[in-house]
Length: 137
Image (cartoon, rainbow, N blue to C red; front, side):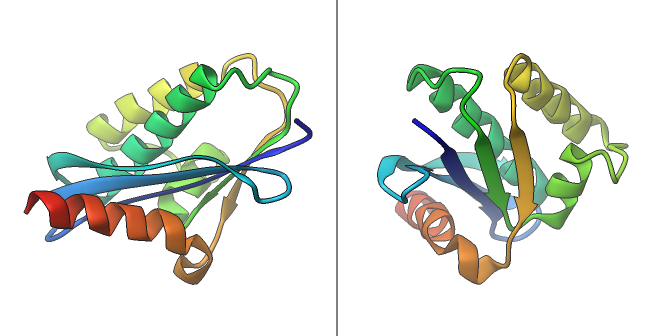
């Protein structure tokens, strides 16, 4: 594989409220490798965003992606992207735990980039979030 693109999204109805995550992983040509949505119970939007990222990285390891394959992670959460880029500090204790888990999962991986995208450019992951919440609320 020459590149992996991961689109993640997390959302909560109310903040906090019933929450879900959506993950769409493709190769560099846009061929789907894995897609899923999950209901995660009561959470804030930011916790859901981080939860989606963590699950995506856990699944990536299961797919056997080797460390030298470039990975582009696209999210519509400016907060999470900027925190992962080191631009914003992570102050909230729950988010800090999730941030550290992401860093742990990324350890040893080369060429990982985080890209903030508009919601319209993250439609599939958003759709998976909403389907997961709708199925459980």
